[in-house]
Image 1 (tube, rainbow, N blue to C red):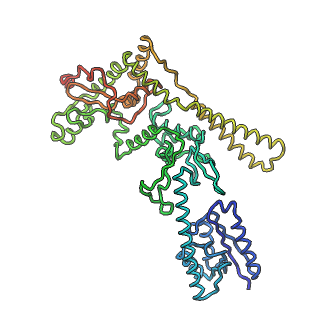
Image 2: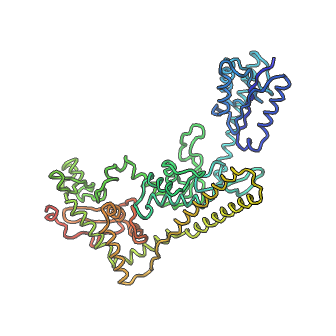
Image 3: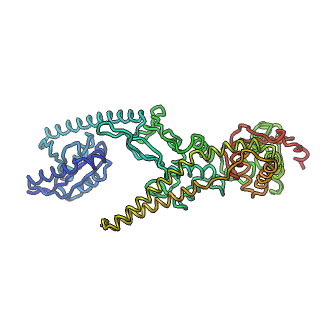
Length: 546
C-alpha cells in the first residue's frame, strides 16, 4: 500500500542554505527513498538557517500542525537523520509521541532502527548523543566568536545603522570583517544627535517624538529605507557604538537576559559622534525622565524653574501665589512644604522682579563689549569643534552621490541596449536608487549650511554691535524663547535677601555667539562665569517686599 509522506529538511545557518547542497541533497535522497518503496511525497517542509535546539522554526511548526490534524494527510514524516528534526532528546521524544497519537510515524532514512522497545531505546540514545554533540559544538563556536571579538573583528550580525561591514583579511576559508562608517547613514545619525541636543536652528532641543516627526517629514530614512520610529531614535541616542566603543556578549542569545558588565567585550569602531556628544544626549535623556524631572518642571512656562535656589538652605524655589493668583512669588520650596525645620531663613521674591533682574543681568552685565574677547576665544574653539571633519563628511557624501548616479546611468544603459527583461524589477531598482540619491542630496544640503565665519579680533565698534545684537535677541524674545535662552546660559541662581548670584558654563556662551542661537545645555553646577561683581546690587529686602 502506498504511503503519504511529508519530507522535512533543515540546515543550521543561512550560509549553508545559500551555498551548501545540504537541503537539495536531503530532498533528493528522500524522493529516491520513497520511490524505491512506492510511497508518495505529498509535501515538503524546509527550514533554512534554523537551529534544531528548539522548536522555533516556522516550517517545523507548519509540518507539525498539518500532520496532527484528524484525519492526518500524512502517514509518515520522513527526515534524513534525527539531528535534522531535533538536537534535543526531550524535544525529539515529545514530537515523536505527538505524531504517533495522530497515526503518523517518524522515520529517519539513515538511522532506521525498525520498531519496538529496542528501536525506541536506540533512538533515545542517539538523540542524547546529538544533544551532547550540539552543546559541545556551541561551546567551541562561542569561544571562537568571543576570541574574534577580542581581536576587534565583527562577528557576522547586521551592522548598526550608520555602519557597514568590510572584509579586512582572509584566514583560510573564513573572512575577517570590521565596521566602517556608511557616509549617508552616519550623517543621519549625527543629525539625530544634533536635533535632540540643539534643534534645527529655529527651535530649541527637540524631544524624541519631535525628532522622529522632523526626519520623516523630510523623507529621511533608517535601515532598509524604512521610516524612523520613536524606539529607533531612542536606540540610536543610547547606543554607545556611535561614540566609538561597541560591546559584544552583552546578552544571552537564548534567554535574552543581560550578562554582567564584566563579561562584555569592547570592540573599538570608528566614532560617528564625539564621546561628549553621546554623554550629553544620555544625560539629557536621563534628566527628561518623569521619575527624575517632574513634568511640571520640564514643561513649565516659569522662566527660572529649576534654576533659582534659596541661599539659606540650598533648596529649589517654587512659585507661590496670593490673592487668587494676582500675586506670584518665587519662594523657598523647603520652607513652603516642610516648614522652618527645613529652612529657618526663607526668601520670597516677586516673580516678575526676579525674572527682570536675571534677564537684565544677562543683557547688561554679561553680554558686554568688554567680555566679548574672552567669549570670542571660546566661540572660535567651539566653531573649530563644529567644523572639524565636516569637509571629509561632505567629500564622502559627494562620492556616494557620484556612485549612485553612475548606477542609475548603467541601469538606463542596460534598458537602452535591450538587456532588461523584467521591467517591474527595473522600476523597483530605479526607484530605490533615486530615493537613495535624493536622500543623499538632502543630507548634503543640510551639511553645507555653514555658520558665518568668526573674526579672531574685534574692533570696539564691532564688539559693541555684536553685544547689542545679543542683547536684543535676549530682551525681545518671546517668553518661551527667553526661557530656553536663560536655561542655556545659566546653571544656577542663588538668591538671598540682598543679592542674586548668577553662574553658568562658558561653553553655552560660546555656542550662543557662534551660531547666534540659544542652546539648552545639560545644566552643570560648575561656575565658569558669574555676573559682574559676583552679585546683583540694588536687590534689597525692601524692594523684595514692595
